[in-house]
Amino acid sequence: MILERHGARLGYDVRGEGPAVLLLHPFPFDRRFFGKLSLPGFRLIALDARGFGESELHGGITIDELADDAVALLDHLGIPMAALLGSSMGGYVALSVAARHPARLSALVLAGTRAGGDSETARANRDAAATEIHAHGPARFLDGVSVRLCGRSTSAAIRNEVQKLAAHSSPDFARALPAMMLALRDRPDRSELVDKLHLPTLVVVGEDDSIVPPDEARALKKAIPGAQLAELVGAGHLPSIEIPCDFERVVSAFLEATLASG
Image (cartoon, rainbow, N blue to C red; front, side):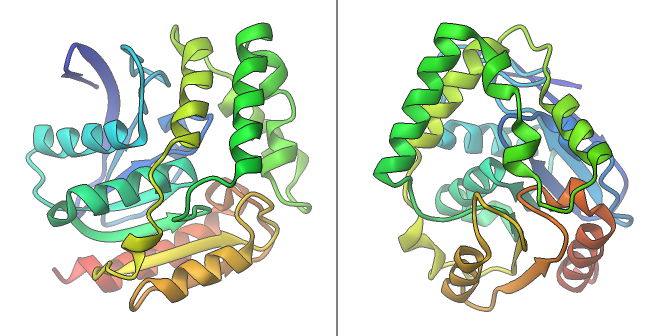
């Protein structure tokens, strides 16, 4: 399905019935990342970030603009409040929604994400990656995505699936990759927000996550009042794909306790 917003087409889909859960995918994927996610009893809404999947880039991009797109989709669907499940980059978008549209959230699931901004080293790495993509196209950057993101024990079949999900046919993809790199580099630091979050929150992290290590996830959980933490064995940065049964179990239990009775 397509939402027209400010001259751009944004791709999304909706499946299931029940309380709404908006799915916000990680970089460099699109909403297909959540295609196999099973959370019975909930209405799952998956949105492509600008320049990814069926969503058009249409100029520049910021994390806050992606958050506004998410809220616009909820408006379009007539949903006053939703739980947000954000993976990595999607977690940055979810925290932006929490900062700028707090009344629209019923709960947060933050998987493999952090509240703080990039370090100087991380900023320089993003600059270098954006320059490489501009010079050589996406292929060299995407090669080895699964090695960087998956855990040590992740099977070859899952790694292949991750690589295929990162391979993209969007017309805007070559421009969207470096543009999103800069959006991630320049995203707002939400460290001062998290201790003011007063809504149910689940922090999820894979034990082998080298992008957002478990220590960071524990610190994020500690900073958010009343937050829960799920550390998942056998996964790296993408537990929803690497160990989907375990991921779905902990997320379903959290959402059912939080939303199903509401």
